[in-house]
Image (cartoon, rainbow, N blue to C red):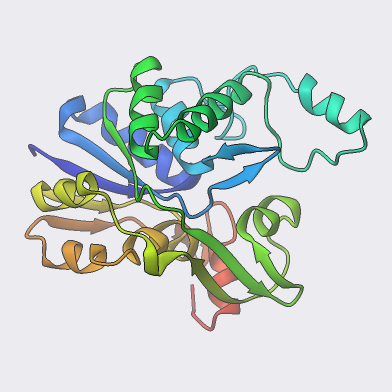
Length: 248
């Protein structure tokens, strides 16, 4: 294969991408990553899925959690807790450097694609990582507790609320980047990683023009399920399927 494209988000996607990276030359692998769960926290632009894939490929991810940095400390969060700020989203002290630099570069006018490229080069990541879009798309969930931002639902509420509907805010005005469309067009294989189909893969495919580009591509297409025996290997995918009227 001269060019393999993987669509990924979260820990499951990152692990399959790592396996692909171990079998393919770096130039032959492009990863299109979900940014629907990006959000601003304490004034910082956080890209959880991009960072999880990037840290995994760089060999510095926390092996116990599958996200964050191995051996990181949390003194900044401990200090925030002293100021009575609930530290519900765990940002490590070294992890903060990533978000500080990303936020500053975006403030200067760099695109998320350009920022991701710089971070990956600095960490020695060989494969190409592409955010699905440079425009903001926010995943919101209508639940029995009201409409929740994805990170509030997933991290703060530990995906316990019952999901009624999923909304991708900003989707109508967003577009896949030229780099994303070119990667899909040139791919010989397109792999849908074992990421949550509703909140990791669908935000990517829902971008105007992208689902049709994948469908029309002559590449071999492979979907890898994160569901085994009717249950998700990790995370809320099976629970969400049942709540949305589908059988896992």
